[in-house]
Length: 226
Length: 204
Image (cartoon, rainbow over all chains, first blue to last red; front, side):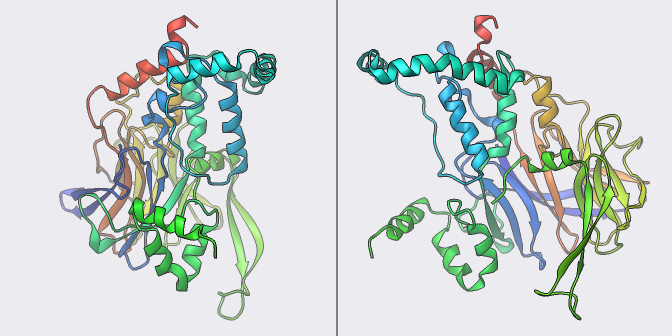
């Protein structure tokens, strides 16, 4: 579990030490990865980034990792999932947070029965070996390597999608915080606008307070026809 | 919007550079233009901090042993010395992410604990996760500017992390990201499942 930490630095005749350590988890989600980025010039606000809906690779359970089957006993590499990941890595455009759930076995079996002889299924069967060869050629270090999943996770570190947050320092509290202002992770330039457009800052901050229901309502309101 | 792992790519870029700017009479504002770039270190390095108090730059520079160390530079690129290289008190693995105390007298940095490892993750992933940009098995240390004295500030357990420390403008508060172990055996359980999902049970 990642968190942000604050402590008072004491340097005296006995040396240097930290006292009054506090742990903050502004998003409240134990799977959120945080990185600290510093203080405001007046020292009253902290700025940090937090992953959106994704745990740190070291903390993700295998069932939540795409590129592999969800069932650890019958796992197999999924070339389609791997293609999707490469595409997303290349775009560098934030996407909506996704939760990867293992597909239900009954549903998979049903689909296999329905589409086993369909033309699209046949094309997929023909394409799969080619995809695997292509994947092996592109990343030979990963091919049939027991460490390949871990190595991929190391690369996926680069794809953690984060949003910036700021904590007013007078609201330091142990554990989860509820009054943190987040830039919108779904707008690529959101963070920059948030910092540069002072007039809109408060409005944006209110809109994106750490209350998931409020955020969903705001998104729904934006989508209403004018 | 940030993308994690950018720091490690910058290390790979192997250059520390300083942009030179020129502006109007006030030296600030929209009239400021980039007039040049000076290369300070032509080698693997990154994670820099420029002290406003003494004008010196602290940076994590990768040495011949493959580990980062905290070095001091002048803004013209003169390398004043490596603070953590061979230091008797400081562990001799990764020492990185230096952050100046606002007084300019101390440097806060991360240091990898050589007595801790990451069981079950494999050498390659361990090497990745224990470098400064990931911070696993790293403690926070404070060192005087002349490197004569150093103090260990935190004591992490295996699999815990200290990442990207900062000192407040008044010098009284430290802010960093940390990974905290929730329970015993979690890491081991995940690693076991990981070996199954990669085909370890099939005898690859």
